[in-house]
Structure formats: C-alpha cells, structure tokens
Image 1 (cartoon, rainbow, N blue to C red):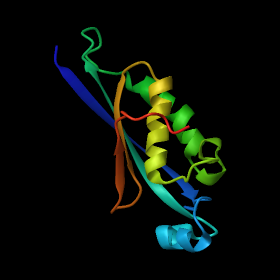
Image 2: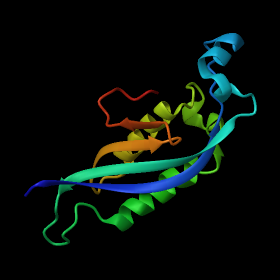
Image 3: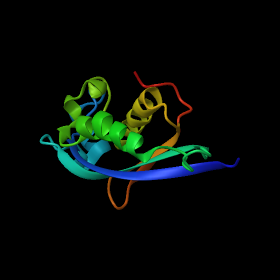
Image 4: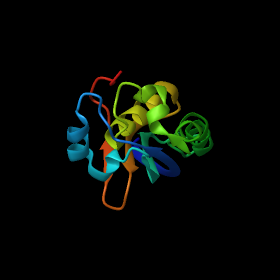
Length: 141
C-alpha cells in the first residue's frame, strides 16, 4: 500500500523574549532587534503536524485523528499555550526562538506519540516567518 501523509493544523498563543546569555546586551539588541524587548512579546502560532504511514485497511486512515488531537491538546497546547516560553524548563538553557520551539515540539511528538510516524512539524510565527523541522539532528538538551 502507498505511503500517505496527513497534516493537521492547530493554534496556540505564547510569549517570549529572545535574549542569549552568551551575548552582551548590545549584541542581543543587534541580533534580535525588537524581539529583545525586556517585557517580551507574543505570537499567535499556527502549528502543523504531518504524520505518515500506510492506510489501515480496517479503518481507512493513516492515523486516528482523535488520538492525535488528544495528544496534541494534552502534551503540547496545554503546555505551550498562553505561556511565557522563557519560563519553561526546556528553554532554561536555550533561547526560545521558533526554530528551537519547532525542534522541541517535534521531539515531544516523536517520543510520546506512537500511533503514527511523525514526519515533520511546521510552525508559523507570523505571516512572514514559518519554520519546519523533520528531525535528523541530535536533540538540543
């Protein structure tokens, strides 16, 4: 049977401040610009999760959407939604850029959701910026 991809879209809001302890205050302002605002800023993120696999002949589906939705709601949206990303443990030693957030979401899915193969995540931060991650690198811990 052919391999089929399913992409599901979710939304959440979160805030962050881009500021690296490895850079001086001036370097942070130069590198991150307005995203280095000491009070932070927020985004309305659009998260796309793509899973892949063969179609189950019994159900006709690649993945049970209720299982995927439940996992995403409980493990991702409740965790990241309406949060200040800077205060989360996974960003205690990393700048909470959307690039790093994409990797973190992918790794959480990969390690916790086994009902389908996680192909990639795509995270849209603004109309102008979106990021995709499909694995292949070592986790950033």
